[in-house]
Amino acid sequence: MATREHEALRQDAPGWVEGFLREIDTLEFGEAFAALFDERTEMIFGTARVEGAAAIEAFFTTIDTPLHTTHELVQTWIVDDAVILRGEATVAKRTAPDTVIRAPFTHIFYLDGADRDSGVTPRIRMLHITAGPIVTDTLI
View 1 (cartoon, rainbow, N blue to C red):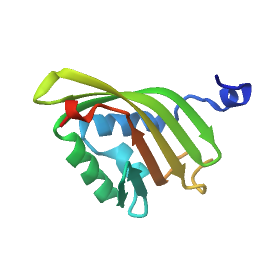
View 2 (cartoon, rainbow, N blue to C red; view 1 turned 90 degrees about the vertical axis):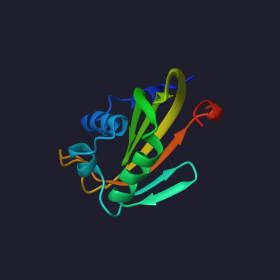
View 3 (cartoon, rainbow, N blue to C red; view 1 turned 135 degrees about the vertical axis):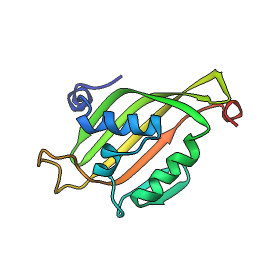
View 4 (cartoon, rainbow, N blue to C red; view 1 turned 90 degrees about the horizontal axis):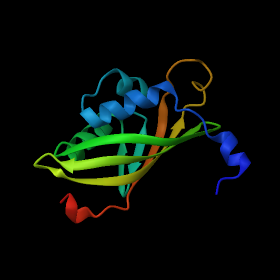
């Protein structure tokens, strides 16, 4: 059960989050992605460590091309220079669209502190992603 302190930290997601999730779901990378990531951005997704905007985009394209994924945001917390998202992804193979799984996820974005209060979309310095638990045999 969440304490009052934790409830007070929970907030609406910043506007850039919706664009980021949409571009991941559609694999149509554009403005949202380009505004958030640069060549210094690091991403850790499970055991994979990826560095740089182009490599992060290629990583998402590789793992998500055979899938149809829709991310649903459940909660957001903003603490100092971190944005923490909790949600659920609906995932199905493109070749078996009727076999759907729902996978919980957590994304932790560490933002460039210099951009935090400027009113512009922040740069992400590091992104940690966890997904699951999922029954991987359903997707493999």
